[in-house]
Length: 328
Image 1 (tube, rainbow, N blue to C red):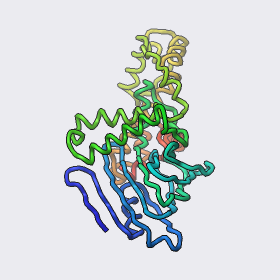
Image 2 (cartoon, rainbow, N blue to C red):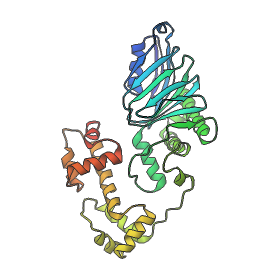
Image 3 (tube, one colour):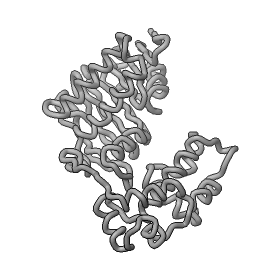
Image 4 (cartoon, rainbow, N blue to C red):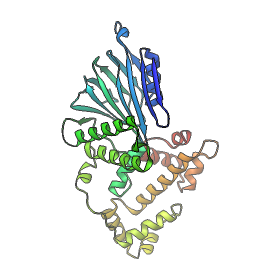
């Protein structure tokens, strides 16, 4: 076994013929897993990992020297596997089994049990783990409004041409630069590149917001909408009615509702609910279970019905409030 961490940066070079140690490193850097090696192939097994982490991304160049099957549970993050050589068969949740090749990468969602059914002996893959909150936050910034639910990416990505190929080239260039050290270790350089990689993935993969990103419309919200939005951000706990917001905005209730649908894509009170959910999420993320309870946070942000709060929260962030609190 050979294990060489790079001091000062989150980089790792790892080599081993021990299946259990290979599994442990994937668990530490990516996800809990089980690696199955067919009988007779264990003597050929040689895990080779080069792994680097930057902000919301964990990048790895992985190979195993033998045919393997790798079983995961739910990943909890978005993930892309790009074969650089060979191929891998995979499935996630109820998605039918597919094959990823050097021309067609596999794209995984945060939810759904995940299995790499067969990683070919000659397969070397570029594995890209993407923090789910970071990707959804970036999409919200690009759209200029909150999402109603976490984005679902298309399960396969064409990496032989177009935007998919460009994104993989970006990932490989960043990965190589991290391995070499230098400017990428500096936050003022790393952060814009991390945002570019998030945006690039959203432009390269299929999802329900792609057309909107491909043909963005300028979001110039009129004064009444801005005034109502500002009031909701200043006092999200307040039990606003549409009538109160209309008075603050200086327009009729009907005009305010029409303007919100046109410029925000939802009603004023739906927007207020999203603001409150975001505040509750941030508080739960920063708190420990011995500091607050989910019920306290829900009431603090004006959610009087705990069951409805939990349901809306999970639809918005992909997990229950208690899960966020435990991981805080």
